Length: 321
Image (cartoon, rainbow, N blue to C red; front, side, top):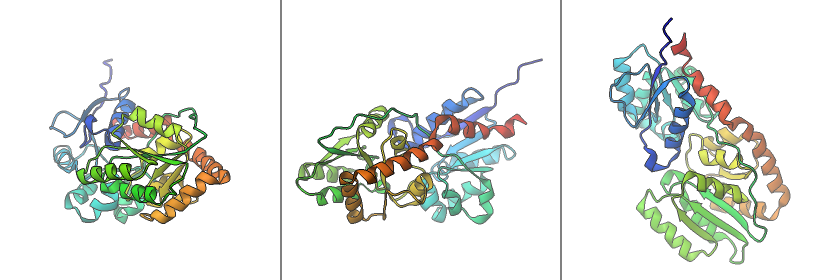
């Protein structure tokens, strides 16, 4: 008998490798997961080539590819992975994003609370696939300082302004050091980062780091500070907890949907006073830091690559029937 042909998957992400952002890393990771089962074409736009299914990251930015595939292959699976800007902004007001929701046969949520943001008739399409990161051994922490990592490109959604406000509120003689990694996707924010680094001796902006270096930064630090306004399911949070580094995060769905409602390291969104107080408490209260570490160890079980790979591969089940 002839050997069955592997299904052809067009995996669309609007961002290429040069962006070094979460969407790109998700797409590249999923391509690796699917490679043993399918012929995967990783691209920034579907060109109409042969494909048995389309998996598209970003309902709005990939809307043209989604619409074209739906028109060309109305009976084939069409999977849309919902990013943070999709779920917490675009699906409320952007017609192209709303059309993508209707055209998808499956909507992938990256955090447990995201399906609640969908229109009720569409929630049955949603499946939860938390992202993953390879577990790292605990890093060696310096004793003289309390090092805090911030990992995220400088753009409004990541709220780097809160980091600079926290830096300005820390005592002059603090042993806390803030290490901020991320490219200046917004030129004005880049200027603010340089100004903060000049004004605050305990703040350093490291610019864009390769992913491996960013992970090692998180591994060496005592905490990750993650102040985003919106997240689909922050890869930086996942990479921190799987590197045994606790997290202080804004209380938004994209963080609570990963770490759970009972996590003890949240501050109100955009509340620099509360974030600073929590950071100082963690730096000076070993019991609090230990409690956050325990909670992160529990959350990390959900973020294993094997678990994510199984869920991603399950998306191809309709093609194997």
